[in-house]
Amino acid sequence: PAERRALWSSFPQIGPSVGFVLANGVMLMLSTTLSDAQFAAWGWRVPFWAAGLLAAAGLWLRSSLAESPSFLEMEDHARVPLAEVVRDHWRLVLLTAGGLAVGYAVFYAVTTWSLAYGVERLGVSRTVMLSCIMAAVVVQGSLTPVVALLGDRYGRRPLCLAGCTASALWMFPMIALLSTGEPLLMFLGFLVALLAFITMFAVIAAYLPELYEPRVRCTGAAVGYNLGGVLGGALTPIVATAVAEGERV
Image 1 (cartoon, rainbow, N blue to C red):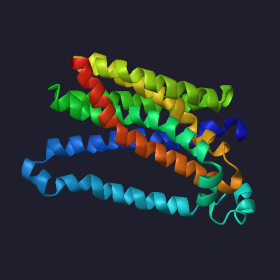
Image 2 (tube, rainbow, N blue to C red):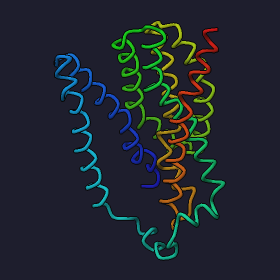
Image 3 (tube, rainbow, N blue to C red):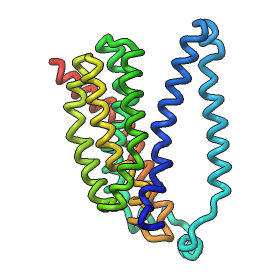
Image 4 (cartoon, helix red, strand yellow):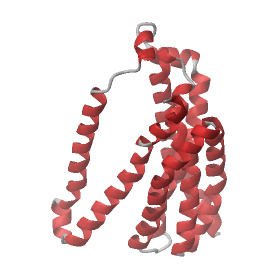
């Protein structure tokens, strides 16, 4: 239903949180139950086998879904939707990619970069870092549908703008809290960062397709979404490390 579109489309947005917790939980379990030799020989492959099965299941589910009536009516009008998106909607693609890049930069800074930086540069134990990050991610995933409900009530666009702005502004305080090496302060920094992220991410699956015409909706949303993910992931280690080194000077 249109009045609950953000809510229902937010459940796939919980996927990154669930995937992160499961992946790190499995790795933590394997590293504690297997010897170093066993883990090096075959244990590290187990998460990849499991991921392959999940990917196959996801592909099967997607192939069994029917397209919306509006898309089926327009599918013959755009034989090369990518060309039309690049030609007629490039400004919108760049705008959405830029906003998503900011959000993804924060997500990757918390879930990937901070773990390596905390362990290798700050000397914090891997267990402490993982515990702080995983706790923040669990809260993020749990609150995603709640934020989506706010999007249904107050509008998707205001939440997207607020989430992108808050994500960009909180990057510096988050890194400052991480640099203390104190578990509670690190958790606080991660939690606020991820709450800012889901303010945008919880509603983006409903908001992004609404920006494009039906005949290019899937392609336009996919290009903007994935370009933002690539940019956010690529720039995160560069920007975050530069800011962190500046904090330590």
